[in-house]
Image (cartoon, rainbow, N blue to C red; front, side):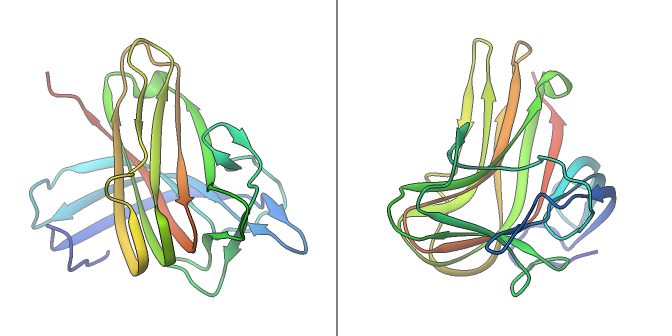
Length: 212
């Protein structure tokens, strides 16, 4: 259970089942995502339903590797030129690690990306929630992003108009997209545009039915 002063609910209860994978482990980078399924329910707010989720985090360590996250300079672009990507055990919101993106110079944007087939999400609204903290973010923002690819109505929400800037404590952010019936892929992740550093933790995907 968790309490958050800034949200419109009193308490949130979450149940999670999943596995973790060591994705990157070398002298300069440690990235430890976890993936699982979950349900949440908020009490004392405007929506008290149980909501299914896909849970994504960065703190489980397993010998096998699974390419859940792909570092990139933009959605679908390999490499993170000008940005350092690590799993940071010194600062986390939940668990033992968060993912940290830090601008090192020579780049415009760094991100972590994952892609799923859109079929299970067609005809639904997908919400990506996650906790983000920032330090010295300038000339840009830190946030989450969701992209629907393929079909007649491709959609992107990258939080350009509401991401974090400057130095902030942990904040829960959300990005959302509506997935059309002919969509092909759903891509999502975290990003840092411009300078500074940002930490990301406790990401989860939620789905709700679209109201005609």
